Amino acid sequence: MRISSQFVQQLKHTLNIVEVAGNFLKLTRKGKNYFALCPFHTEKTPSFSINEQLQSYHCFGCGKGGDVIQLVMELENLTYSEAIHFLADLAHLRVPALDPAEEKRYRDREHLQTVMAEASKFYQRCLKDPEGAGARDYLAGRQIAPGTIQQFMLGFAPGDGQRLVSYLRGLGIREALAQQAGLARVSEVTQRSYDLFRSRLIVPIQDMHGRVIAFGGRILGEGEPKYLNSPETPLYQKGYHLFGLGHALKAIRQADLAILVEGYFDMIVPFQAGVENVVASLGTGLTPAQVKLLGRFTRNIVICFDPDAAGANAAFRSVELFLENEFDCRVATLPGGHDPDTFVLKHGADSFRDAIKQSLPFLDFQLHHKLQAAGADLSVERKVKILESMFPFLARIQQEPVRSNYLAGWADRLGIHRDALFNQYNTFARSRKVDKAAVAQYSQSPLTAAETELINFVLHFPEMAPKIFSGVAVTFEGLTTSNILTCIAQQVHEGESFRLAEIEDMLTEADRTLLHQMMSRATTVVSETEAVNCLQSLRQRSLERELERLTAECQQAEQSGDMDRCRDILEQRKRIIMQLNK
Ligand SMILES: [Zn+2]
Image (cartoon, rainbow, N blue to C red):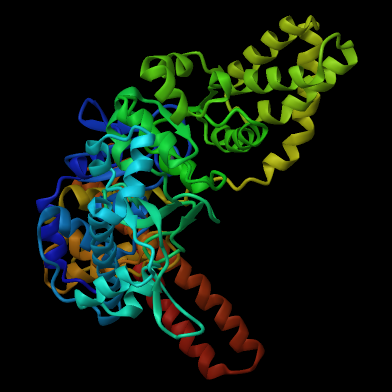
């Protein structure tokens, strides 16, 4: 797939990576660079850096890096051309014509987005119609204000099963598209399309940028299921979104804390009351993708699930994911069997804030829960057993001092000797080490100093590239940066000056990543003479490799008695040895 490099260049000149990244991440300026918690690996201290001058990013923790295009590819899980389109939208530029297949995929998504936006408008209008009275009553009962209804684009789906389908048809939207958007189904009996959502209050699920990607529909009155959600579509994959994130984003960044609740109204009601850093998990158990998504904005979470057994269990499961991703994870319980929705309505936002403030660190919450379940008058053995059941959770905490703190606190609280508990835990931890070793570690590619320094030099002094590379024929075979160096040499040999954007276009994604890593790691830049020496040493290396290859080939030819071939190879070897001695 090729997009004109001219356009890519124009795009990159128009955009500032710092501003683009700021839409996704909480950036802090430190000296010349900006830092954030890495969205691609889990960490507590920011090692994700953005260099405004180079317009590149790099994570010193996991090694990911690249330019603004790479960044949105990674963050939004987009292909290269999708990322270009995404950025072009931001920059208000039009992308020149694309490869037909990519173009189609992109257009399809756009069409689906249009259908969802139209459907959302339709549902919102129906809520205002006389037939929406029941839904309006329901919302009034939950004290949802008109402004909130508008903000969250709440709507109503009429009951007869044809209204949305025919409305969309009237707009010239094909039924197949409505089906693909998950809004219509085909009746097996009549073969006609009918609306998926009927007689339901409609809650749109939006992506981070406020685009409607799915709908949740709550039944009004009796019936099953109570909640019906859009099926998965090219726009919406279950477990990849958090309800309300687009609305809550600013507040989450400001507070550096997110409150995780379960249902739509558990998010909407506190938000309406002024506690805005709330997101909902959308019913299903929390997924790693959702945890990673949230981790882009904060690493502090308070889980506020229903206090019933199911809620507590859901909280336990979620917490493991959060702990693994190095979140500071707390659990809030609301008194009186309330969920956040009913609690805020009854006691107000301030009481809710207090409950959040009084949340317990997860491990303490869990221990408390277990001890309560075990009852009073516990034997020492029983206490130790309960503490042991906490070890797997404790082990997920990466920082040793935090773990020690917990252990000491628990030992004191249960009247058990600290040393004894620490020993017990260490035994447990040792038995787990084996599993840990299996976790693949990010390994740095073995770059030679010569290739690194040479590339750094050319990146800093592109105008010098033709001079450095001219006249020396070098094969870069066998080097990690072989493709990058070959591209540079090619461009220079074709009589052109060196342009980074064009090189990037010629490279595979892996090589582009490598190049960007090198760019962000670059510290010192060598002199011109040293750069020439680097190239010479790479040349020598490649000649030596060639020599080795020829020696082996010659031996083979000798063994098979092919003396002509043998002479041929010896001739080649002689030429290379002469070059080496030059
Ligand atoms: Zn990272």
